Length: 108
Length: 122
Image (cartoon, rainbow over all chains, first blue to last red):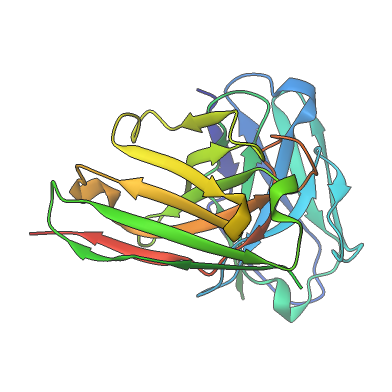
């Protein structure tokens, strides 16, 4: 099973700042089959990115992602108030699919 | 608008059973693989099970294999999860989720329900 480790666990930032979240896999992720989700308190997760870098429908272009092999990143170019949430990465290239433990973005 | 509405959760004693349902609308249900994903209180996400659009492919996490059964009724636009021999560690919010890609078992979840809570406790 591929273990995904996200860092940092928690990040305190201010609106307008740029942020990069990391997701590191214990083994290479097949064909960059990596997705990112956002989850706000009391809500279900929302798909942001699939295929390592492809934004899902309706996702603002301030969200971008990249990576391959074992190292992946999600970047938010300019934080909006609604972006403070928990972010999960997920690999779907190997069975079983697995999720990272999440990175919490909180307001400074 | 895509909607996924879970039901059937509740408080149950260890060793007992529960059946979850997910009613889907707003998309052609029988074109998409569907999944159950759970989230223990204050924890991360754990994939539980998935089923292809035509039920020909079914998969389970090792943690539930042999105890849980996923099924779907395309005529009723519904997904189910029969959970037997429940354990305290099965306590979680159970989400129904839709595959992003038509006709594929890709395991990217582009729509999620609000979840139904399951608590296993004596």
